[in-house]
Image 1 (cartoon, rainbow, N blue to C red):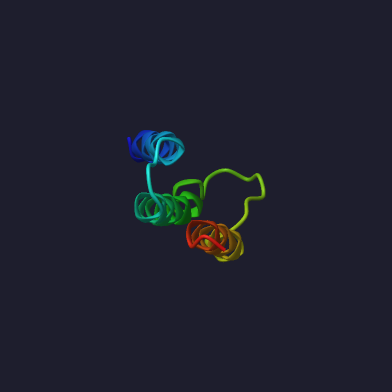
Image 2: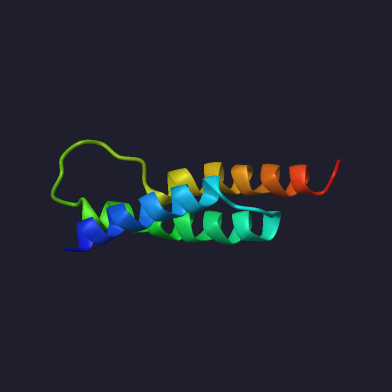
Length: 75
């Protein structure tokens, strides 16, 4: 059940991110998506495929958030 909720949350955040109207909304959705992504390694402990850890994906998400902030500031 947790895996289903996790997948649905990620799908919802991605859909809403594509429909976001302003930078504040995008920032909140990116934060929610990042938080949900950070849960992924805990949900997939039993899977033996290598996965990026939350520590590895966090810098990429931070760069994305910074890029959106920069774009939204009119620079």
